[in-house]
Length: 316
Length: 222
Image (cartoon, rainbow over all chains, first blue to last red; front, side):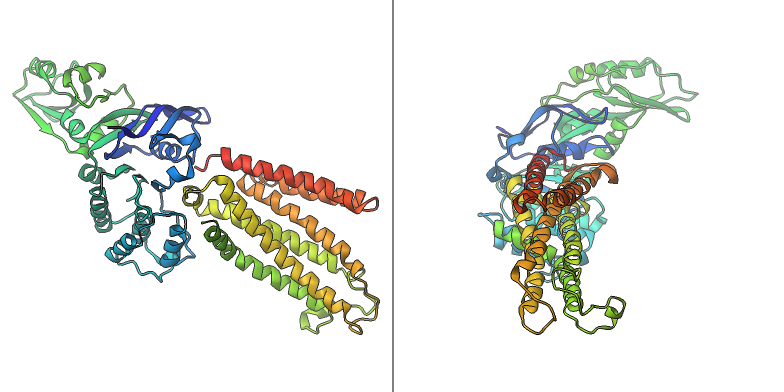
């Protein structure tokens, strides 16, 4: 399967700080890729580099097989980009905006647009400045999808939307995904959304891609281990893949990537009363994985992951 | 698609054009001796000669300069402020096409807004017995000239709007530089030759335009 997005050591500096550092990203065609990271991790900058809004200081990015630096207008027409905040011309009505956008595309699907506008109950005569944030997001999505793009790049599309609107937006996104194997790359802070939609995730930490694997692999790999002691817990000596350890009363809580024999033996060596291995949802796993203090993080980089070998890359 | 973009630009510039036309109308009303309470503070003298001693040219240039800057700012900083560059630049057009259409729309608005009032006033001045002084069409030449020269400020302001400067001073340097060059060039060269007056502004407009295309291609729209 060819890659819809492919970057080679993509790097961007703002001042002396590398906001994106040697990013090697591959998004296969037909994949829904959740691009995650904390504020300032470099997600938006990466997306802007992929759409040609920001020029990389070094490295290359290819989208639909073309170098972003020389992206032809026709190729750009096959890519939908929803910028953060859904910028649209607020003085236009919904209908005017739709007509304006339609003028740029030969394969504009007016029927599909009508269906989406009806679905979202967006009145064509309303000025865009009178729409709520959620409605603007819905209109942006409708306009992005109407030219039948092969690739959708969405920069935090659900930012600022309330829970109901967000759910509705995502339902629509899921419906759109099901059409002819579109590729979608979207960044989000709302991990529940990503968990529902994405079949692969990438996590940027300080501009470095630390995780690039199927969503389930990431979730299954990060585990919370609770060691129950009938006394004050001893200090944990450490093991491969350990992200953090903290004392909670008479228990010791460990967050471990790739819990296996080596880790179990390290836990058992402390002779706890009980060992509980708790699965985490994506949000908890993400928080544990990315929160400070900064340290060397285990890297998920392979699709057919071998827990032992992945864990061996990391050091607690 | 270029037509849609041009129409969008013209619609966005319409409010500025209306304001400019109101200002021009005020100048014409005063210059043609329309009685209006406001003009008691700015009366027209009967010995004023249209286009020569009535201050019409100076007032038109002032409004035209403001119009040129306002149009360019609306087309550039206006897009930045609303973050709509991201939407616009992602359309299946080259950046050169987008900027070219924007500039074409801006120049058309500038030319139409400025030419109409000058023609109107010249037409009034050409009608016998509207004022007690002679009138020849050649008397309008200086007004046309300085009005056309003011268009150079449009390109300078367009460059300013795209310029990714962090502070106000450097951002407006092209407008200040262009204005200084045009005024200096006009004052120095107009006694020598009409054609010579155009050399410096045309060179600067060429430089500004090539810079605009270069900046648009290379700058980050973050």
